[in-house]
Every structure is written in C-alpha cells, then in structure tokens.
Image (cartoon, rainbow, N blue to C red; front, top):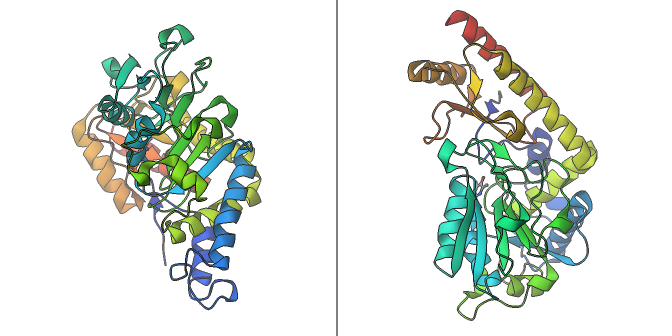
Length: 360
Ligand SMILES: *Cc1c(COP(=O)(O)O)cnc(C)c1O
C-alpha cells in the first residue's frame, strides 16, 4: 500500500489513524456484531456515538450551553437557503460580505427570500483580500450579517471576527472547521460541510444560538427548519450515521493531539513552510495579500500557463495530487487541512524547489 499526499480542497485527506480505526471496527463495532453503517439510528449503540461526537465537539470548540449543535445533511450549500428561511424573520433584511464564490452563492440564495444586501466585496481584485469592515457598514435593523470565514477557492481568511454589534453574525466555516480555536460566543450561528476538515462528505454541522430558533417562516420546508432538528436532537429523520461516526473518530484524534490550540500550532507550522517558500521563490508566488492568507488553502501561480500545467502534471507523477487551482484563479492550490501531515508540505516544497531549478 502506498498513499498519496492529497491537496484537494474537498473532499480531502482524513487522518490515517482514523481510517485505520474505522477499518478495524468495520465488521463489528464494539461487540455489537455490526458495522456502524448497518445499525439503527435509534439504537443505543448509535445514540452513544452521536452523543459522544456532540460532547467532544462542544469540549474542543468550547461551545456554550445556550448553543444547539445539529448534525444535518444536504451540505453547506443547503444552508444557503435554510439560513434566510430561519433567520430573515424580523426586518427581512440581511447583510452579506462577498469574499468569493461561496459567499456569492449564499447571497444569491438569500435574495430569493428577502432584502439581502452585499455590504462589501473583494470581487474587484479576484477576491484576493478580505474587505475592511466597520460596524457602520451594516444596517442596524438587519436580521443577521453573513460572512464566509475561510474562502476555500481564493485562500483568504478573516483573521479578526467582524464586529456587528447586536446583529447576529453567521459564518460559513466549512474549510476552517476545527483548524484553530474560535470564539463561538461572537456568533449567532456557525456551520460547515464536514468534508474538508471533519469527516467524509454527507454531514453538515450547525452550531446555533438558542434564542435565534423558533421563528422560521411558515413556508420553510420541514427538513430545513433548524428548530425541528434541534428539538429532535438531530434525529428527526435518519442522520448520516457513518459520517457522524467518522466525525467522532476525527474529534478523538484532535483531542488526543492536544485540542485546537495544538491544531493551530501544527497548521501554522505547515502554512509557514509553504508561504516562506512562495515569498522567496522567483518562479512561484502566492495570490493573496499576506495579511489575509488562509492557513488551510494556499493558491499560487507561475507567470506561465504552460509551466503551471507542467508543474501539476509532474507533481501528480510524484504522488502530490489535486494541486490544480480553481478555474477562476488558475494556477495551483494546495489545501493543507488538519489531516495533511507536515511531511506532505515538506515534500511539496522540496518538489517546488527542484522544479524551479530545473525549469529556469
Ligand atoms: C466546500 C464549501 C462549500 C460547499 O459545501 P457543500 O457541502 O459541497 O455544499 C461551502 N462553503 C465553503 C466555504 C466551502 O469550502
């Protein structure tokens, strides 16, 4: 067996320890005589899995008791509609900050349901920075303010949480989930698809302040109503049981390593190695302004499309895979989520350095 270093933006690498544990428990989970894939979501065994996952998530992220944790399906993209349906319920106004494709899609969906306004955008420079925000930019009667915390495609991140005063702040954290500590109390809702940093595809985790629940619009589909899922402890219908189980294993892995402070340290060390190389290279350069650089997604380019293509092809032959950038940025993107080992980034940087010598 020989595994590649997978730099995909998502689905992405899972910790090898987690995959091995899952393999060892595949046929007989803790003496139940079945795989987690096969068991009833109403069984005692599964109840213990989902409760443990929630407990670990609360512990690692320091989630206060007045927040609900929901394990849902439909991906982050389903929340783009669920959020306005559940929370555009006062003035029908919501303010969006447009920092890339995912924020744009969420904004477009919200416009279907009410007065969604783009209060700031970094589209003018291909989303290579985070717009400077000020409390005065938000409408004081907005039902919520929406941001995409880490912009997977463009490689930017909010290093500071915007101050929205009394207006609930909602953030998509799909691509930075569990990558470093985050102050949950600053948000009305945090949510993300699991397939970048938490589990395989199929699970979306929503963390919602309780007082915001209970006012979904009448037309809200039952399956998009957060209150229904909160009241049923995420068991209104069949949840993605196996993905929740892997999520539990990933959370145990993070806890074992020392929690989110430790995760942040590891991620900073990996990102620094790559950014330092990019800053000193004459062939490669990062596409994001240094102060807004993501720890998770690192887009970079050379000045030649031909060279970019050659790089990606040769990297793949060297088992460094999925380095092609998003079509709107071009070039390359290395996604270095929690599960990417330091050695993977080391191998990438060594390969880039060799490539630069050979091709210049
Ligand atoms: C991947 C991603 C999404 C889309 O997630 P799905 O689960 O595929 O709907 C949304 N937002 C961000 C920030 C992402 O990285």
